[in-house]
Image (cartoon, rainbow, N blue to C red; front, side, top):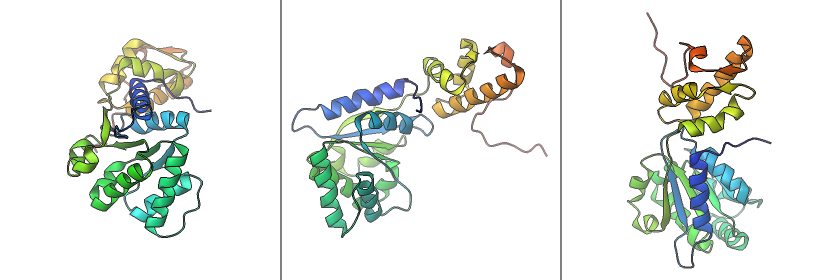
Length: 239
């Protein structure tokens, strides 16, 4: 079973989802988790979603309204068939009957089209104000202002937070098991991560590989020395 580190963004999502699912009647049921790539939004949302048996769909750039509905129905265990309105009605019925949350990742692809945004609003309203969590990049809240009827139905705006040293410490046993990583090295990783959970995770995995080669059971910044770290920057040719 895959381990999930209990980092701050996971707790933010869990709190927002609890607010969404336990909200009073009449309150809107949309939430938006937004932030730069690499902040761990997908991992956090999927971890909480799996706890709640949510329906989880990750958008793709080439998807149409029909494709999105087909993927949602497939995630629900329903064979997609019929017209777009028919599939929408089927999805709404299942959302209302199950009471389960729908999570749509990479929602920025939806805001390229009025019809895609309206389709998701239809899923929310037609599903009995079904709770829906949307994931996207840093500017997603600003993009959604274009659709007031949608924007006004967002109960929680959740800004994903940059990785902290405490988060890095929580990640270390998962990506660098059986090796004690010193606080000074964790601070060094966070400093060079530009907030990214992904970059710290990649570097912890790199430390684990180096520790296996060197026979380390503990590593500090002094031990690591000037070895390079993954920063996400494109390499530059020295010619």
